[in-house]
Image (cartoon, rainbow, N blue to C red; front, top):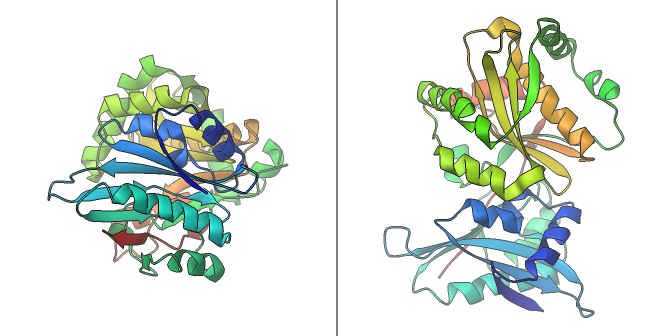
Length: 326
């Protein structure tokens, strides 16, 4: 059975619990993610089995007019369900089609946490009449198809985790600590200081910089599940920072910044280590560092970022976007 909810429905508490407990759960499918996107409308589609048990959920963000008279319905990293359960996937996509019928023209997109080599799951989505382009490049999808993700954290200790790294990142983490760098949990009041180095880095690296109000909304929406981590020198100078969010069984590194005036202090290494410690503390199995590019000819800056991220997490290739037009 497919059910379409508004974002104000009381059933969304049940959805949140479902997302938290599901292996495909992630922050972008949490009902709280809709609060981070105030310029979008949103609805949640549910799939329930014959006993009424929730077996699938899909948060859909909606732009009624994306500037050209057509609508965009987008389920970031959704749906959340067993991707091999054809009935659940069918009901969730049917719910998306019900929503699409409210708009004259547009496109629906979803990009679930389905690996590119999961042929069975891909076939289930294609059976719903969705279009799919295998191997899409970085800038050809809404969310990155290639990401750096460390799985298998469950049951690890801090010692076993740090010993799983190569010698060089271990040395940098310990060197940073020995040089007096400390990582503290920040609050919303610390956002202006973080934002200054975040915006400067964005200008220098030519990447999109979110408004400070957006970052504030993210931290407020996720509350104790969101964390602003800030690394300071022993003199009290802010060196690096990151926003990380717990949802499902993963910690996701959402935004980060580095002041490059003191590279010898290796604050970026300590920052990743502290996010991994956060994942261990919260009992998460995965640390998602976000998008990467494995081909320098495709995007040199993103490739350079991968040369750092791979020291903490391997590459994970998702199938990509599934689409229908209406």
